[in-house]
Image 1 (spheres, rainbow, N blue to C red):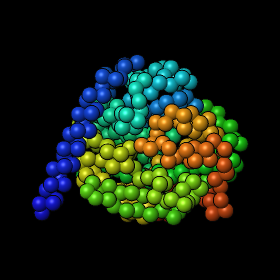
Image 2: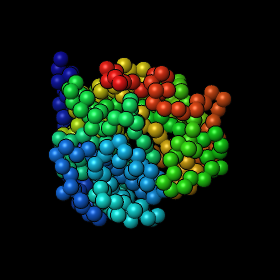
Image 3: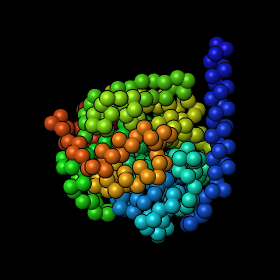
Image 4: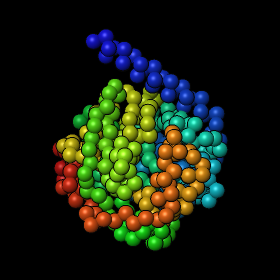
Length: 339
């Protein structure tokens, strides 16, 4: 009993520390375009940190607008490819910029947490990377407004998702990508399994691993492979904070919203479009910048393999069809939300 009380106290202290970091980090953000006056009480928001994503962003924006995002809050981290200019022209985007260290800002979480504290309280908010496309059951015909209405009706404040990594049949540097193109025209395959899940204490956060990156890059040390579970959609409260990307949250009860592949209640999938041809150039840049891992020296070989433009396709690869296929494979669930 005393142990649980002590752990609960430590997690409250950690959450307050993370919120304080975010409050302090606001000083490093410069307003480029502030259109937040257009955010209504029933707005559905999307928050993201980006750097040199001008090729991905046109489709990213279109996809999530179709789902029902009404306003985007972006932090541009010192882009040099026209990303800031592209975003500043969008009527439903508010944009901040910073030249500060992405790594030192908890991989951007200090910046996004501040924006969520200030603008997202009481609203449903997506937190995404530019290479992630959210899908969920019936997403072709039911909006995020429909989805969040259902979640509120069953008193659920967050929806979890598996990050499903897509890849081409060709080598990564063999098929060019056009800005605005649907990446699924190129990234047609995924690994249907195996995936394994582990619930971690004391935060009760899930840890899902497996998939193509583990198969190709981390087969000898699987625990170094990427974490694939996320909590991207949350009815935000200013006291909430992500602890590690969108993999884990505080208060820790929110982490119980997702049980990983095979769960029975409603969940989504983040289609991960990292493995377009542009990943080759971006990997070379990120290896030099050393901003994406706590210990970048451990991942030099990983970057080198990506820079070489490998072929990720395997005879066990599965061609992507739609969300119903993912439901049959146990990678997504609609629970009691039925058509």
